[in-house]
Image (cartoon, rainbow, N blue to C red; front, side):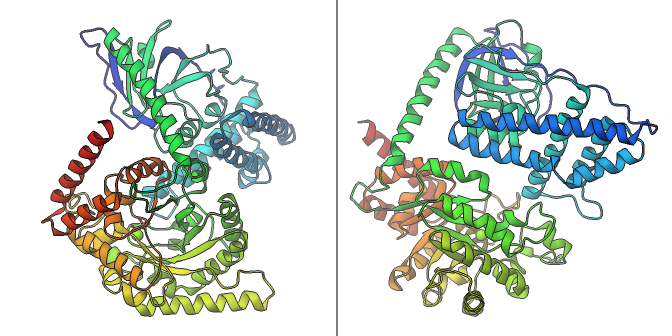
Length: 612
Ligand code: PEP
Ligand code: MG
C-alpha cells in the first residue's frame, strides 16, 4: 500500500537526507542501516491447464506440510519475545495455520488443481481471488473506515499464506535476519508480518521500509515488539550504501540518512530521554491513580479488538471500561451465534484476572456499519441523517434477536469474572426499560435451562451520549445501574456537528462548555442516585482534560490503553481544589477555545511547579 507521494530525497546543506514516512511504533534509534533483500519469488505459469492433478495435489500437500512446520517453528520462537508480541504474533500464526487446514482457501486451490492447473498457479490465483473478494465484495459497496482496514488486513493474510506456499512449492528460500549485526537498523522494501515475527527486538534497533502502512499486521507487530519503526519512507533504499548511518524517529516518522554531527548528538539525547520516559511510565504503572490531595480515581482501558489485550495488561489499567463489541461483526461470514460470542468474551474476561470488564452491546448505525448486518438488511436503511436514525439500542430493540443472543453470551461468559453490560445510544426511559425486560427474561431462560450465570445478574447500565440522556440522567439512573458518559457522541449531538464530517470539524469540540455542562449534569445525577459514573469518550485519553473532568465530578475514566500512564501522571500532579477551580472556570467560559487555553496554561504551570 503506497500512502504518500513519492518525491526524490534531496540532501540538506549539511549533507544529511531527511525522509518522512508513517510513524508506526514510537522510539528513537541511531545506528547503521542494513538492507535485507527478499529473494524474488519465482515466476508462476498461470496459463497451463495440462498438469497432472494427482501430481500437483501431492506437491501441494508437501508444501502445506512444510509451511505448517515452518509456522510451528515460528510459534516455538515466541517464548523469546516480549509478552505482548507473543499474543499478537501467536494469534496471527494461528490464522495462517487455520488457512492451511480444511479451509475455504484449501478447497478453492484443490478445485483449480482439478482443472489441470500448476499448483503454484492455483495457489496464486485462489489467494488473489480471496484477497480481491475481501477488498471489493461483489454486489456490495467496498468496505469503508475500520471495515476497510480489516479487509486490507485479511487480504494481506491470504496473500502472505499464498507467498509462503509458492516459496515452498518452488523451493525458494526466505530471507533471514540472523546475519544482521547487533544494533542494526533494518531497511527493506517491505516487511511482511511473518518477517516481523522473525525479528529479535533485543538485536534490531529500528525498522524502516519503503512500503507499508500504519494499520496492517506488520505495524501492529512492530508496536507489540516495541521496535521503533517508520514504514512507507519512500526513497530510503536508494539512499543506502555500505554502513550508512540513520536516525529513526518512530514518533514523528522522520528518517535522517547520514545524520550531521548535530543531528546525531540530538538523536542520542532523544534515545536516552525516551528510555528514561519508558522507565518512568513503567514505574507509574505500579503507582495508584491518586490526586495529590488523596482522592483515588479509576483508570480503565477501552478495547476495540482483542489484539489490544496485551497493551491493556501492560498499561496498568484497572479493567476494561468499554469493550466495543462491534469487532465481532466485522469481517465475519455471518452473525456470530451465542457460543461464538461467548468464546470471544470469556478469554477476555479471564485475561483481566478479576478486574471488571464493561461490555457494550453492539452499537451499529450512524457512521459505523456492519457488512454482515447490511447483508441481512439491518442497519443500512439509507437514512438521510443516519446519526439521528436507527442506531445503538434503537436498532437492537427493532432486531431483538441480536440483543437476546448477545445478552445470553455475555451472561454465560460473566461466570469467568466481574462484568457489566452497557447499552449504547439510550435517549429515553422506555428504551432502558425495554432492554432491562429482555435482559431479565434472557437471564430467567438461561437459568431454566440449567445454564450457570451470575446471581444477581451483572449490572446493566447506559451510555450517556445524547443531550436527552444527560438531561434526564437522574431519572434514567433509577433504572440504569451505572452511567458511562460517551463524550464523542455527546459532543456531536450537543453541538449539532457530525463527528465524522471534515466540514464541521472546527465546530466539534468536546471542551465546549455546553458539553461540559452536560457532563456535570450526568455526574451529579450519578452522585445523587448513588450510581457509578465513568467517562469513556476520546477526551478521557487527554491528560490535559482529565483533571477538569474530575472537577466536574467524574471519578472513573476509560481510555485508549496507551494513554493510561500519562493520564495517571496528570492525575497525580493535581489536587482536588485545582480540579474544582478548573471546572468552575470552564463552565463559565464562553467557548471551547477559552477552555482549551485555560487547560494549557494550567498544564504549563503544573509542569513548572514540578520542575521547580
Ligand atoms: C462515545 O460516543 O463517546 C463512545 C465512547 O462511543 P463510540 O465512540 O464507540 O461511539
Ligand atoms: Mg458513542
